[in-house]
Length: 92
Image (tube, one colour):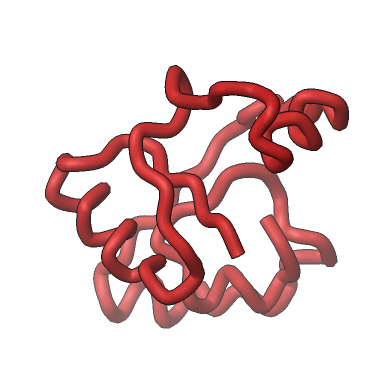
């Protein structure tokens, strides 16, 4: 999760936003019948594996089933939404 302000546009979230959480508009959630759920997702980043994946030294096909560039990010989301892709890698 990024900043606390990201919660205002979030569809889902993983982790806890940075900050106090006092700016979350609970009235809006209630009035618009919005359900917000979250939970603990322990993420572990291994810098060596990330660097090797970005450099193309590590075959990440077991994790990512589609690679898109920045212009194709909306298409990547659409394919995940339609269940035609599971995990999309974005390359600049």
